[in-house]
Length: 122
Image (cartoon, rainbow, N blue to C red; front, top):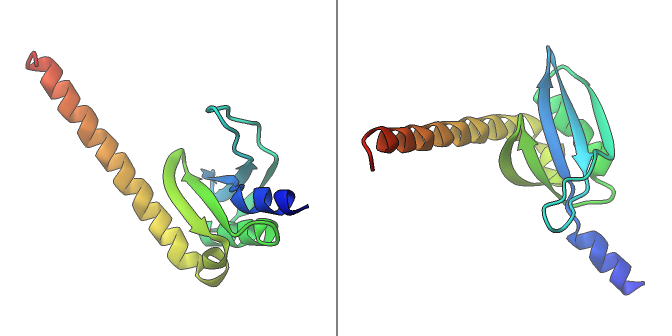
């Protein structure tokens, strides 16, 4: 039985948050090895704000997991503690949005550098 408890502690679900029209939604995937992307095992939506969505994520997963991997509108934005989602959802929502904007800006800057180098024949 000890091995089963250890496996549960190691497993971190991937939560994919997304803007869905005027509301927010999320889905949960169980990570697998070797880059296999499994289908979503749970989803919920219709939340007025990202913070409301995060609170539901915390309620849905908090009894089984301490941490989650987070993606926001296809951006990987790192790991978060479930407790953090419960205690400060507005703060987490703002941080996730900022991290996503920064990741997109970095991608665009990198793409611009590569395109400039390509045009200059490097």
